[in-house]
Image (cartoon, rainbow, N blue to C red; front, side, top):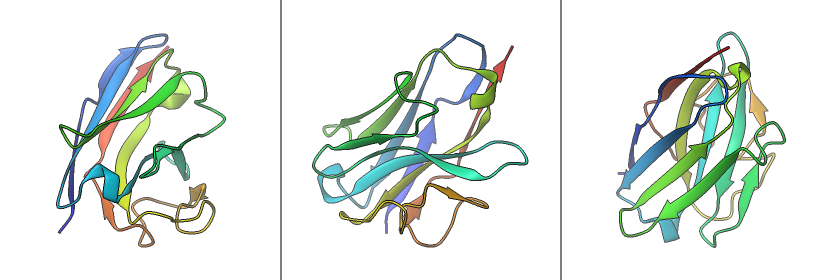
Amino acid sequence: EVRLVESGGGAVQAGGSLRLSCTASGVTLDEADMGWYRQPPGQECELVSRIDSEGLTYYAASVKGRFTISPNNAKNTVYLQMDSLKPEDTAVYYCVADAPGGDYGVSWTYRTTSCPYDDLDAWGQGTTVTVSS
């Protein structure tokens, strides 16, 4: 069974930084595509970033240039470094793992009504990020 444990959320002022961590068990990072979704209060859930088993990355346009996804294979942990945070980054952030090769817009949907959803194998419990202006 795949288990994902997130940490690193919290409250920060606009312009600040946070680093989210997602430690996986039951799967190694080179056997999975890993990503982060977020769901702001009262809004849709969106794909923020993904890194596949070969190291290729995706970023939503809203975070490109500010967020960085990176793996630490030795710790079996994926990080999401979030810089220049904005109030609109306020959300619950979910770490996700899935078998390699899932398609964007199919299993890795760009937006959906709510998270977690069933098409991806494993979800973390969610960690809250609050950015104040």
